[in-house]
Length: 127
Ligand SMILES: [Zn+2]
Image (cartoon, rainbow, N blue to C red; front, side, top):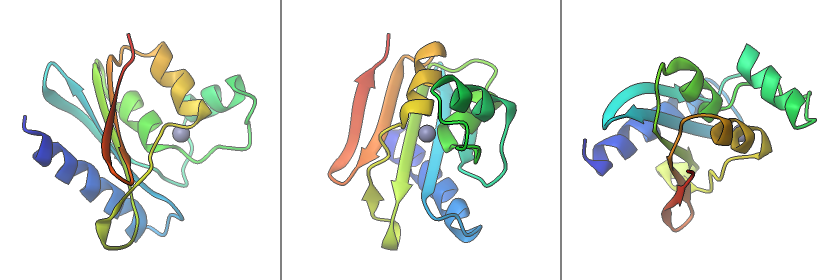
């Protein structure tokens, strides 16, 4: 799976968030052994996983599901996560995971984390 294709998919998801009227537009792609296993965006809807981790880090009011949480929730197995945030004209903005997502990512099987910044994609090895 080539990187620019993955980025394209993540940006398309972020655009779906934008179209649905979300204030911030995040998209995520989950992979397992180089295959896409989930795609997701942030939504106003909550999920059991979002509530669980929001409570865990003492931010219980953050109930709207984040793209990372949805991508992990939808995947049966996951080893790589790409998250992007877009602004005007699909410009990449920082999508460094928040406290809730960090906690979940570190509890998950995600080994490779990629996220957008204003200057490109940043990589973190999680395990
Ligand atoms: Zn988050």
